[in-house]
Image 1 (tube, rainbow, N blue to C red):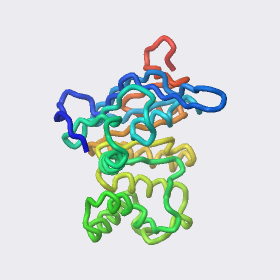
Image 2 (image 1 turned 180 degrees about the horizontal axis):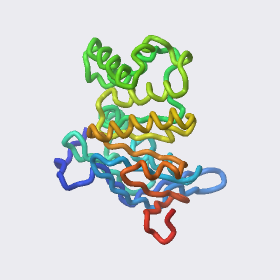
Image 3 (image 1 turned 90 degrees about the vertical axis):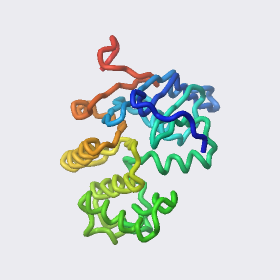
Image 4 (image 1 turned 45 degrees about the vertical axis):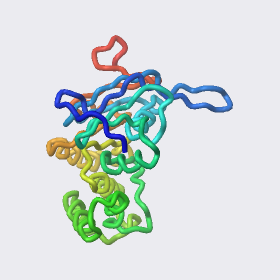
Length: 244
């Protein structure tokens, strides 16, 4: 993995510079992101709010390195390193992502044939950060933290949607990543369960994690430490003339 200059205490944790993402199809070129510039500070709970098709999920894919940039730069300063994602090989990027970023999906993305504890263990085993016995102990501890220790040996089919989301949070925390990104994590949950999930996020921020969450729900904006809007692939900051 390419190591660059040490992190600076005054530098943002995440920095997007002029990020452009175009998709090509038979109908031509579709600009999903149009020159995104964004800074995320350590310890922030940043909300990115926009309608379906605005570019929210594409932006998260740029942050996590799941998809490649058309142009621009994504820099993340974590674990004592300053990393430009576009400079990493595919293998280095996968290893870096497993150690640095926890991803929480609206659809949970749990493996149905594995028990809950096995689902949470998987990122640890893939990155080889813990001895197998330790990874199991840590997975059980994380399930206890999200209130699911009594269900640890069930498979996902036998728990509710809200419980699945809590497993997904535990899995995202498995390697103790400094950055957590969440893609509409409460969109398919009832309001009470969604509120419980949000409480967990707020506790994670208080414990030192940085969270970037995308949502279409404008009503969640007061719960973020900061929020920006996104529309037609462009960010809209509060106070902009065309802001939300």
